Amino acid sequence: MGYCTENDITKTIAQALTTATADTTDDLGTYSNVMNIGNTLDKNLVTTSNVNYYIQLADSEIDAALSELYKTPFCEKCDFETVLYSSIDEYNPYIVLEAYCPLAAGDIVILTDGVHEERHEINEVIDGKTFSTVSEIQYLFQEDTRILRVGYPPPIRFVSARIASAVIYDKYFASESSPNTSKFGEQLREMAYGRLNDVLNGTIVLHGHMRVGRRFYNPNLVDQYALPTGGTIEKGYKQVK
Image (cartoon, rainbow, N blue to C red):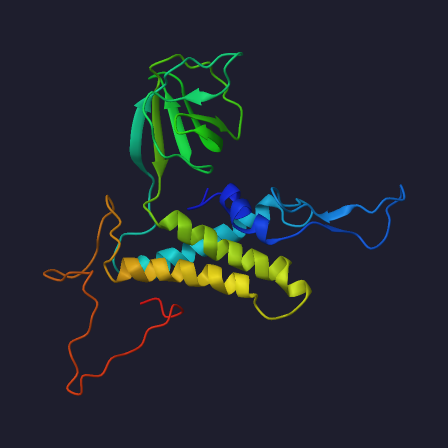
């Protein structure tokens, strides 16, 4: 698994696309869907292996940009812990937490009672304390089971999802009508590189992760000394520095 999930990619670009049908009929005389977009990606068009490949490319770009400030690759950290409010059984397949937490689809949680442990991705959040998982929970955990949310430091997941989504959108959809990159893809890249610049400039600190740098040197201070003429260097979002 990379810094983001396939669910993140789907939710980032699915609503930017429309459903289309084939120009010719199939063997049964019907016009089949070539893109089932809106909530899901057509697996005949964008496979899971392709999505994971572009996520890996996005992750390597993040590691290359931030390796001068932090030790890479980044590791998951636990940022929230609570316990199971009600037991999971055949009548209750949902995870109900004792404490509220602003959860979102795509978040990773670990259920452990000290003996059994399962890792799941959140599929749908019913409210702040109740959610369902992408895969079925195998063990019937009892109440007071520990629930841990793990993840990479913000905004790593955000950046990874936007860079990977931009490449997928431009390659599989925008390129069908034009060889140029799409405005939507450019906007996704601008948001992603903007966050990377925030980390490099010290506006955003990745808490809990090892920093690297020279002794007596603050890696967050990347501004140059004032020039004699007082000149400045403009930095666009493509210049991740």
